[in-house]
Structures are given as C-alpha cells and as structure tokens.
Length: 247
Image (cartoon, rainbow, N blue to C red; front, side, top):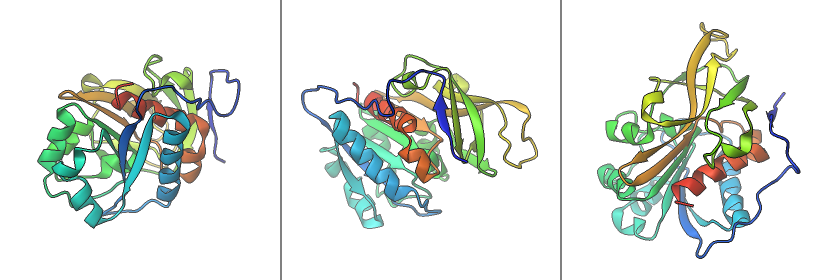
C-alpha cells in the first residue's frame, strides 16, 4: 500500500499557497526518454504545470520528443528559459551540444532532476558531475523512512524530521555526501529484495548543489504516479524548483 507521510503536523492536505513575486520565471520540462519510459511521466508533466500555476512562481513549457530536445535545448532557445527540469528522463538525450547546456547551467541558471534524471547520460561525465551522482541499480519498490537532513532548505523544510514513502528506491554509484547539501537520506537499505536489504547504510536520496553559479536540485523519488500526486512530494519538488530559480 502506498503511503507518504511526515512527522510534521499540517493544517491541510495542500499547502501550495500562491507566492507573490514580480514576474514568474520560465521553466522548461524535459520528459523525452531514450531508455526506459516511466508510465508516471504524464502525471509528472501535469503536476509540475499545476505547481507553477498554483504557486505563481513559474510558467511551464515541455520538451517531449527527440526533435524538441535538439531545438529547445540549443543555446539560442535557452535564452528564453530560467531553469530546466529533467522529469524521469533516461538515456543519452539528443542534445546537439551538451557542453553548452552544462555551461548554461554554470552561468547561473537552474536545473532540477527527478528520479531517473540520474539514469540519464551515463556516458557523459560532465552531466554526472553537474547532477552530483549516477544511478546504479534498484530492487523492488519498498516502504522507507527517510531522514530529513536539512530543515531550512525549501525542498525539505515542509517534510518534518522523517518522510515515510513507498516508491522505487535508487542505489547510486557512490556516496556523494561530501560534495552536496544532503536533503534526504536513508540509514539502512530498503527491504527491496537485494542482498543488502535491511542492513545499515548511508544512502543519498535527495540533495542540492551548486554548478558554477547555477543551482542544481535532485530527488530520487518519483517513480510512481501516486508519489507525484501526493502533496508532500509536490511540496518537496516545488521547493527544489523554487530554490534553483533563486527564490
């Protein structure tokens, strides 16, 4: 059974109150896949669009096909974008100049990645360095209780001290604790059927970091449709997008 809960008391199921700002930012959501394609992508698109409208923080456009990637992630097109979201992307996307895209982030723009954004560009060390880690494997979907390590960051402050959630839990190529601001982590391996299931560990789950003058947010959560529909997860990713936009 799915559950997503926090130890923090809440006054209602949805706390996505509008935020007064001057001019809303422009966010490009990339959902094209060159590998596995998650069935939750339509829900992800609808959720991110809703969050932008409800919060008043940003407007949303979508990059859904290989042709879109080639044109919308080109340097000239990015002149009209403030941040990019990779929502459950996979594989090596057909960006014509990945180095230029990474430089665009380093120049002071935002990047947010959800779930399989870390299962993207395994053949591009520059992308992995920008993101902060690389997907390695996963087991069965499992219930976990994540420690909320940073109570002041916008992506984790709404979540209380612990976040209980049922999702597909990623294992990463390395422990990146020393290179990022850790937001969510696990202190033991999930009961996912892998050999180390249930054993103590230090597993990254969500983090924030700088890339040059740009800001990067990543969360490994977001495999399931009902995760995207849950208000706590929505506050989590809204806070991440808010932060990469500089609010």
